[in-house]
Figure (cartoon, rainbow, N blue to C red):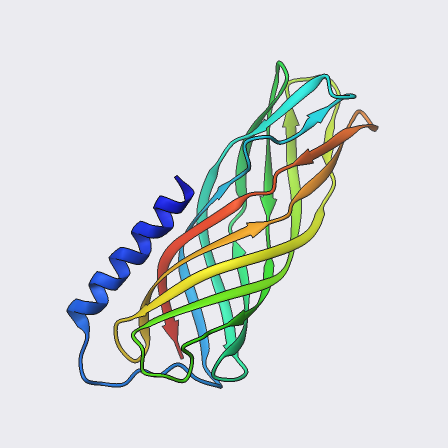
Length: 208
């Protein structure tokens, strides 16, 4: 499902580029500032661990929200990008209990553009970096208070821009994020929640 979403975004972008292509050169290069805006879907992995000595399985559900990035290219082929978003609101189950939590996942990646500096209309890129996830507004159907610790983790990224003109492009991107959170209930440590999501984003890109 995750692969099919990104494949659809890329295929649509390639088709649009073919329609709008002209003889004008739109080379990506050093000194470009850019932003990407769209909708991102956070899809946690299917097995989110277990709590209370393995007696309660955890299931964290998907959520989608508005997201955007800001980036800069130091050279034709190397750049950096910061991902931000409005809070994602995830429902979850812990055994017979249900609950929800918000999280913000600012993510910084160092990116490589293999076709940077060329006139290619399709500009793929890969990235590696770090994610910080802040949890808030934890709720659970139990009398005790649930707390989820913030998380730091590694990130991998794949993406593509399909150029429309000198400034605008269609964009599709996917990140894998290592997000694990220590959980406590009523002040007692009950284990670790393993979210480790794939984040899929589709939208538009603008170069300044």
